[in-house]
Image 1 (cartoon, rainbow, N blue to C red):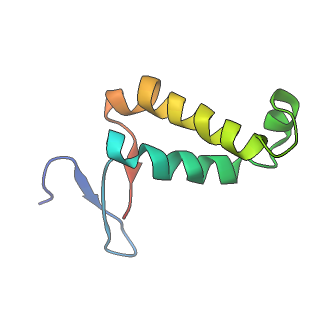
Image 2 (tube, rainbow, N blue to C red):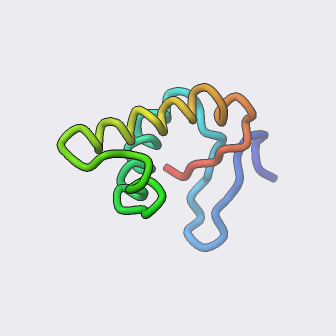
Image 3 (cartoon, one colour):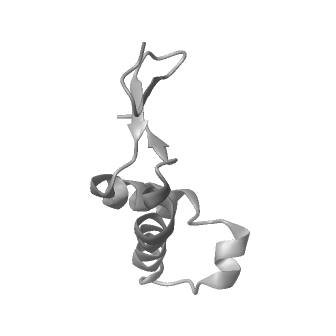
Length: 77
């Protein structure tokens, strides 16, 4: 049986855990990279040197203000 707040990834055996505020920087960077060339974010944000940081700031805000507090965001180490 898993400890509360942890699940086992089926194939890798790595323990996933509920994301915490301490994970926000890493996750916001991951999301910013994942959506860097997304057509919707192309429409919402300008291209240029400031865009990567703007995306990271946006995702960090979403995580800290709206997502992590619900305890349903999971992350694997």
